[in-house]
Image (cartoon, rainbow, N blue to C red; front, top):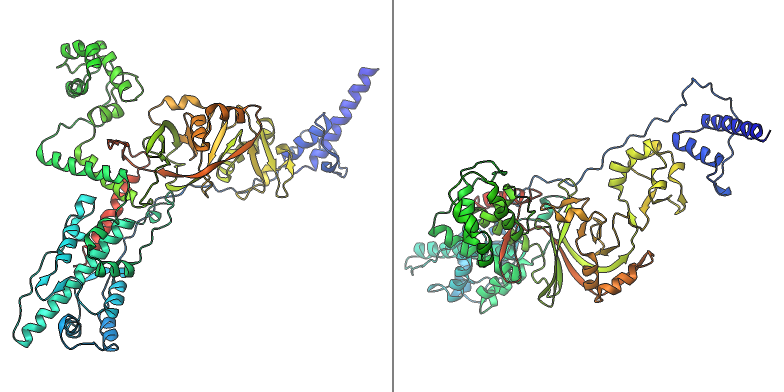
Length: 631
């Protein structure tokens, strides 16, 4: 009888469930009702009263709500860069200003300047608008030559000309700033005097315009990074051109002032030195070029193999030569990748922190043979431009996350204390490019799932399996902050504007691992641990959704907090979520440099994993083209 009783109850329960499903708007609602009936208890305040309805026949499918339209959340894109246009200096405005302000004397430089302005109808000189406005404002208030006297160019002018004509040493385009020295001989006739004054005015204003352009480019860079792509996020540096011109006009050493506007950090100085060295080497000798797409496995042949073996032999230290020198000598001329050579290649790969798989591929060739000097020079030029987007002074204590090198470096009081491998964003979920300050470390963190991941990845899964989040360690909260069951939500009705917040609970499977290091920003980029430790052994490590995973997060957290790794472990022990504020905020540079020096000044070169070099090079070309329209 008991079995019959239970069977009848079960049948009744199933019948009731089917009845209620008829009033459900989705599979999620149905699952929620079945949970109530078969043991998954629901608090009283969440219970619903459902009116009775006819039981549908088994062959009739349960009506499902049509899924809400969802548009995939796309990543930021690269833009079609537009270079700043040039305008003519408003000579008419300068004339009007001088006419409204009579000169104090009828002779001397001020008088000569006024005569030149009055006699000049127009100037064939186009410059950036901010520079044109600064020129008109300055000379309206101080109508006199800055760079010329009765004998021609002054000593101050010659010093500045030396800086302008040396612009290429800073990775700039020389023709954008170059000025030739001029001599303006004395004239006797009125016509000759007038021509002389007009020539002096044109040269003076061109010199001023070039000096101001140099100041802007040295201080801010030639390209506005935020106009390159949505992955760049910089507070655009501001330069008061009028103030700069005032300093140039009054300073005893305007040349030193212009030089001081370049980035004042060791990385920039090292890149500048490397640029000079490479240019000298490129002019002095021919270099051996290897096939950059070479892919050679044991047993294969390639004509470049002897060159690679020669490079390995040339770079080998005494220890390497002692172990592999005999094999290198024996097979120096072979183009067949014999089994005897595999240990040599693997050893060379290990020396350069590559995966020692014994396969001679693009990355192995790039590291062993190096890039061409032309390619290196191009990367240095782009790195010097990018450095101008960051603060001039980086600080003696800082964290640098360089995406192309897949590394995180911590420098304390000018000494590198940590340098570790990282995993960065994929090409479709790129790590952004910006700088910020580290504020705190969170232990046993929750992971707040970003809306883009919810829409692009989780929502399709939840429409098939509404209870997925409940079973896999996630918490769901509605707009009122109340925790709800994932299975109770009709995910078919949810579109791009998901009215729920989702977070993953702390634990071994949490995507952020044991801790995260926070520098709060609108892109939700931060450093963190990861349970996917195997990825750190790979050469190319672009696998994240944009955040930076650390190979040794406990060491980085300890450094940020000024405590030991053991103390970090105590904060993690027990699994409780907690946070600790850093004693002093530390600058962090989330950067993208395909040429980057270590603290000793040795420059390394990296692949352009996101294709940003090409976009920046194109933008710089557009700037050059726009400026060539001026004179």
